[in-house]
Figure (cartoon, rainbow, N blue to C red):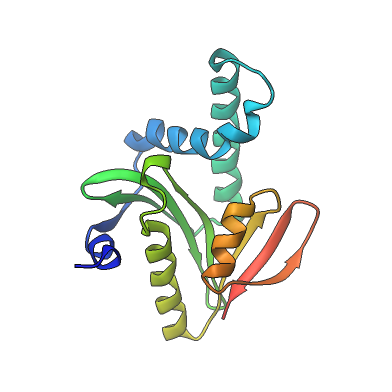
Length: 162
């Protein structure tokens, strides 16, 4: 059995519940930790700051995408990440995808994004997203998956896969 078929078989999305709050924060911490490591802050300073940023991000997503689906990514019966998707008649928007470091590079994110491509193709709409300019690893992954640049501002690159 190939790695990609093994991964496909073992990925499930479940709605985010209040009880997932600590894990959502942990996932957020891992996505931003490198960025803030250069500050020299210790955990006693960094963790409260990142918790506040995580709360702001959640509030922002709720305001910008009130109908978005917030899901936990479950791989081999373990919650390993978070996926936020907003669907409209014009687009499927990949709002956010984040996976704990020890579960990256297993094809989990690629499989989930591939599933969005299949869904979008059936509805004849694009999949769109924004990636921070300083997140070159994610940007390269999105290009590899077939996303193309459709715009940018000072912070973000807007991408789309038709």
